[in-house]
Amino acid sequence: MTLINKKNPKIVTNNKEGFSNGWLVPIFNVHDNVLDEAQYPRQVYLTVIAPGQIKGPHLHLKRWGLFTCIRGNAKIVVRTDKGYEEYLTGVDYDFATVQVPAGVPAALQNIGNEDAYMLNMPSPAWHIDDQDEHPVSFDDYTFTEMCGNDE
Image (cartoon, rainbow, N blue to C red; front, side, top):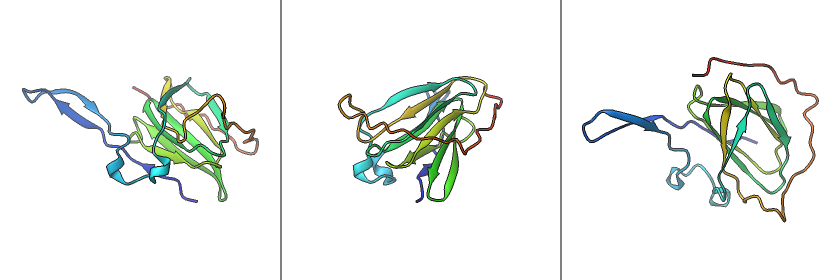
């Protein structure tokens, strides 16, 4: 199984005088044709991971995850039929968007020295009546400490 790992360019924006007034990062656009329509985001939320901390692992049997770290840096660890795979996202990794299919357990690790702000744009959306949370363990995986030089 191949996961989608799409780099998202940082685009400098200018004011009407032509001077830089910041930047933007396009994360999801239906016209990119990266996702099947069934996996289009149905919800968007922000999860914050403290430096050196890990969220998960989580297993969703119905819900696909679409993760982009928008501040700091993070590692997404998934377990597929090939074993463990690692994907990097954040300011030092082109704000990569990583799609985690339903049925693939994943953990999120902050690999920097500041809070990592991770957007998740799942499909289907979380609902209190169908939380789709299933127990999973990554006991045979070693999370390494990778604190970098976040700005």
